[in-house]
Length: 201
Image (cartoon, rainbow, N blue to C red; front, side):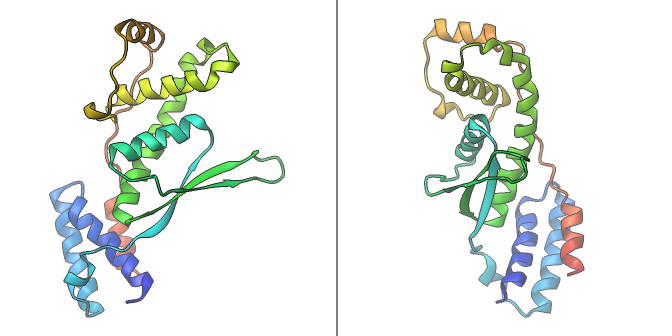
């Protein structure tokens, strides 16, 4: 099977299983049937989706930590991920980092949508408390604590992954991070456009 055709089928198949509404899943099922008939492909042969390498960019330690937490929340094994460092030219940016992972298209979309949403939202919340971080020697520790508190408030840390802490420490952290708000993520993949894209190819 041609790789381009397989990619198209897997994108539609992802919507069959994880469409946001019943109507989207039904529409995806009809579109899948058309594509399989057109290329004379048996549905059983696509039930084991292939893995492809996908790249997740991050600019700093906080974004890298956020990405790892989201992957753990989605039960994605990131231990085999490859890290890449890319320097930009003409002074646009010093560097832009990537982590590369083999994933199914369905898993990639779910992880990337969550990451992009919380990544933008977290930046705004960080501005509320960054003035509290006065000691640069402890900058990394402060950033890790902030991301941890932010992701807990956002509900993207599973209860079994939480580490028990000293109540005095928890009270101190609550005073520092009381004014930050967690994100409220909802799936926002434009399934209709994706289906239209697959139809016209």
